[in-house]
Amino acid sequence: MAIIKAGKVVIVLAGRHAGKKAVVVKTFDDGTSDKKFSHILIAGLARNPRMVTKGMSKAKVEKRSKQLKPFVKYINVRHVFPTRYVVDMDLKKAVDEADLVDAERKVDVKKGLKKLFYDRYLNQKEVTSEKKSQGSSYFFQKLRF
Image (cartoon, rainbow, N blue to C red):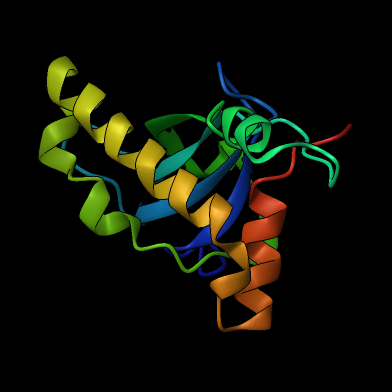
């Protein structure tokens, strides 16, 4: 469990979002009162941005980039596959655990995540660390398998 920490990019293996990439927000090594097993809180992309080429206009690039659709969920540690990539997005501020209980507040959390992911997607070149810039570019690519 020491491998999976906040900011790590993981691939979801089971459930509705199987085959999608996500970022670890928080880890629960010993479980909680309602979930007795070790689990993590993840925020990921249910729908990735579409491919962009050099010849496209700025309006078309913006429209294709806004196709992002985020998801937030608790998942068992055994149902994720950790990758070698790390992202330096501060998701702890965007995802509050108390907001995930109520369905209406969860929608607001997803809207905030969409804005955060969209901003990072457009400003990938401003990431200072080379390792973290590789992580963010990997996170926004569609998983091919």
